[in-house]
Length: 122
Image: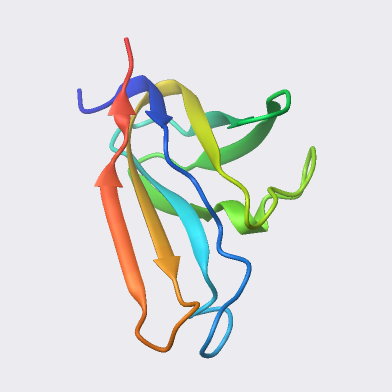
C-alpha cells in the first residue's frame, strides 16, 4: 500500500501579494494529496504558528484512487489561514495517502514555484 497516515509540512508562508491573473497565478501554498486506495480519505489538517496556538482541524476529502490539491489560502473553517505569516501543518488521514507541498510566489512578474515532499510520519 502506498502512503502514510500522518504527514508534516514544516514550511508554510502565503505571500500577501500576487501578479498575473487570478486564480491561476495567485500566490498560494498547497498540499497535494494522492489517495491510491480503494477508500475515500478523510483528512484533518492542523496549522501551527510561531506565536499562537494551532488552528484546526480543517477537514478535507480525497476520493478513492484520486488526487486533490488544496490551497491553504482557500481554507475557511475554522478560520482563514493568514497571509504574510509563517506556519506549518500536519495532515492526518484515516487511510494511507502521499502528500507533497507546493508554493507559488507571484509577488514579482518572474514567478517562483517551490515543491517538496512532505515528511511522512509514523
